[in-house]
Image (cartoon, rainbow, N blue to C red; front, side):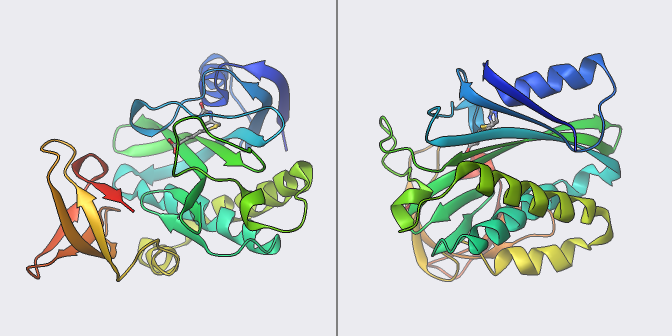
Length: 244
Ligand code: BTN
């Protein structure tokens, strides 16, 4: 495995994307840093981390022409790989909050940012950025963030966790092209946060709130919800926010 260890960088995703633009990179090149000064999150958000408490890394993964329409396979596979690794560390109540936040109980402990490189209708490679709150003690203005250490009585050695996650990610991602979307969807849905219970959602444009039940995901990775009136709908990331 090609692993690059940095002391400080703005963003491991940006660094790896730039590196891949400049030179051909081996499959599964990993970049990790102790300090990430301008971590990037989903929807243009930032990502908070500390040198001691966070595990920050990005993986460059080459795909042999993965159809763009199946892009959600990457999120599902990465989420399942992380869940498997956390199970080895006996972290209770691990779930995936659609599309790809990993939760321990009601706290978000992992953020994932997947950035794809496209050629026509296909994904040829991705930079998969992962930020894990291992033992961050407090989060500024982030009431829903938590750390693995909040849920575990034993001390988690960051390097051990990192090796375990890389192993799980390597195996899962190498298998991605061989597993059917439907098969992955079933596995992913088995770990879905707040599935089959009433949740409050917010329409980010109007600010309107409504109750609905998460039923699963569609064949394109959209969230399938059932409203109180019994209406089923499929929604994209920008179309709603789950409040909990
Ligand atoms: C999210 O908003 O939930 C996604 C956060 C992703 C953060 C990780 S940390 C490593 C990699 N580098 C970045 O700049 N972002 C990702």
